Length: 133
Image (cartoon, rainbow, N blue to C red):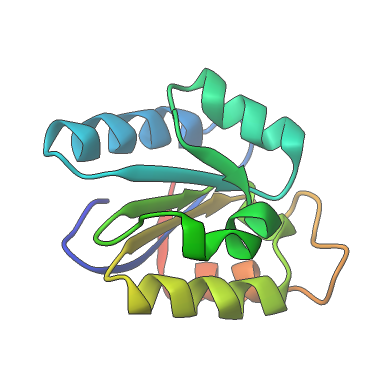
């Protein structure tokens, strides 16, 4: 799941172990000295990431709005509930990841709630880059 670059997709239904994998990814990255940033589309999902041990967490919109104030070079960025993120936010997020040499893990279930904005990006990416559980 972790590598030195790129985008990874973690797709699975509720109860299939996505949260467990995200906890392990956080521990592995922090143990090797890498900064981990957790993102989610809603404040409730941000709270869930925090309860899983993620200490630096933001909503996706908050992160993108404040990105110039956040040091993220070479970080691992984890997006939980990634199916709820809109296409425009994905475009901005990919730009941030590329410009800061970050790794990105997108976790979610394309069968759950979709983005209220123009979306479908997670489903498309999950069909191309999937690590299915």
